Length: 310
Image 1 (cartoon, rainbow, N blue to C red):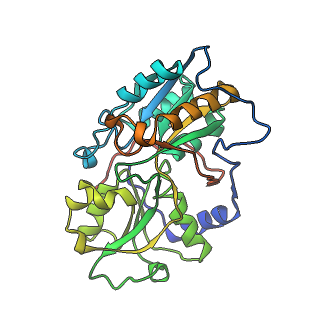
Image 2 (image 1 turned 30 degrees about the vertical axis):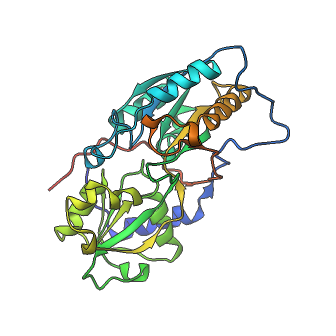
């Protein structure tokens, strides 16, 4: 759903954002006092996992469908055979449906962009921890939000965005919503009209059609078809980027899964990565999660199911 905010309302949002605090650590990191776990323990671990992965062929959006050929079959088989860990996946093509499942508490964990799950923690009562991050086909585990405008635009820096029209993402997309808004708030930069779309494609379309002066998109979108469908790479320029954040993570609800079990899964995922990564996963598999403490506000409502306006 396209939402239009006045400058006055946006300024109020900035006060809230600037006073917000980072969350607790989202990554399950090694600790000297953590319970020891053997990834090859004889007891079998069974976990129900919700999946909404931008590179998975079962859950990818149309804009990157050509390169999103990831399949988890190889990983599931290796975990089952070599580590006595059974992951039971349920695939969600629509983020809105994934959010409903998270709020219903029907799964032990999720594989998705981490903010998709974390922004629902308060409402769902879950305590998600990232046990591993997943590398993309270029072997990168991190992403950013890009402030993108046309190559001929006079906009050269964030300071030039005062009073401008900007397309952001919805609230389930940290790199296109919270993080860029926080960057502008920190510099006391107040745009004019702000639009909130559901996808990078919609943001880029609004930019190329002249509806906005700048669009915030995910870094992976600039190399995927959702960018090239609208213009050539030389037609865009990036004037700023958000801080890095995990792209896709394996997360477990620590209210449902013991720390010992979480560590066992973490060790198993790391063991089947690198040169041992199944080819259908794309890239080099899983890595130890990096520290990430996203800033949250009081408004942690799930993203609404979008209906793009004219």
